[in-house]
Amino acid sequence: MSDILQVEGLEPLPPQHASLAFGVAETTPGTIYALSVSGGVRFRPKEDRFVLFGRNRPEVHVCVGEDDRRVSRSQGRVARRGDHWWLHNVGHLPLQLPGSRMLFPEDEPFPLGTGYTPVFISGTSRRRHLMELYVTGDDGRLPSPAPEASTLKDKPWKLSDVERLALVALAQRYLLHEAYPQPLAWRQAADRLGELQPDAGWTHKKVERVVAAVRRRLSKGGVPGLTRDEVGEPVGNMLNHNLIVELLHSRTLVPPDLRFLGDD
Image (tube, rainbow, N blue to C red; front, side, top):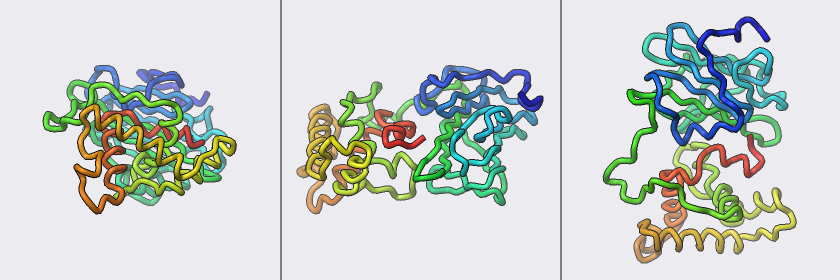
């Protein structure tokens, strides 16, 4: 292993570590967590400390896209400077941040705010590699939902495997943090699911039935905005949009769920 990786205070996270979207254990304010499907690290704040990520496992702290040659050997660097952790793009591909913000190699470093920041890297054959970052706040924990958000639940909603797959396909633009996302059309979602499971009989009608059943169940559970009577005409995508927003707010769906569509 390179000497650059032998850093005092760098604590490894195992590949089976839970998604950082669920928050982190209480710890020192300003601590950085970095996690991919290959595992990750935790690092307390100190000037000039940094975390390097990319596909060259022996030379980075966090390996991401190890088998995808479009991902740079050293793709990104998160460095501590002053009171912030700064994200640098040191590779060839742009890094996609929330809100469709793209960080290019030529850009100035991006300051990470407190909390969760998913970073996507587009690879070969429509693959998306996820790098999760989390900077702890004053108490080191995920902020609690706002008091007025009555539809948020302490626990994620229960979904069957079929329901989760259909909803991840429907909500993929939201999970990718695209600007002004909309649910996929029934036929688009069915086509994507048909590519993944050619023998499962996915049609736009099947996707619609599966999603409608989830809407009815959550509506009975007290979630507003999931019926035509509540929304009014024209309905458009509003019912599915409200459903996806609830699933995201309750952390029933999180960005790592994109792996069910074959994305990293």
